[in-house]
Length: 161
Image (cartoon, rainbow, N blue to C red; front, side, top):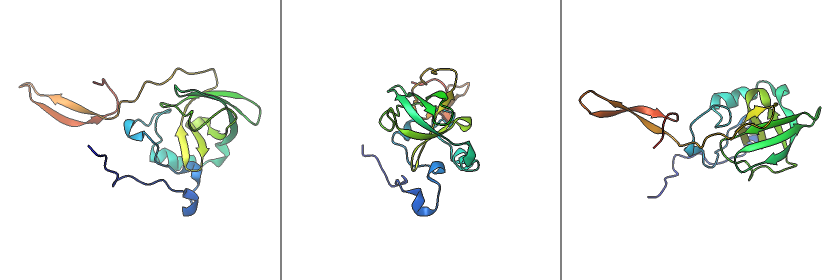
């Protein structure tokens, strides 16, 4: 089966459209596997808009480690404070030790590069546990007393196959 790309939004440089790249969503490879918008998963478009309302909350930082299981660590450039974070997928291909980033710890966001903002569950108390693998959307099935089943919606939570 061939995957259709007619409904996908192509990557673009938000600066060419007068947009702040820290608050503009770019298509994330593999995003179709996750629909969760809690910290450490995907950024909801409303959250992305809110990130630009308080630019003073962004802090310059440097990555000290990016692991394959989605965990990362870094330090703030001002004050040299350490932080840890976790994303539902590995960010090791995008980030490596010494990479400059900006973090917004209060809103669970890390600015990787123009058009690349990722949601990270941050901690200042030590490394968090990796997040469970995302399973994509699954149907919510209602079973009637007569045994018939009807799909009533879809969810990213709950038991998987």
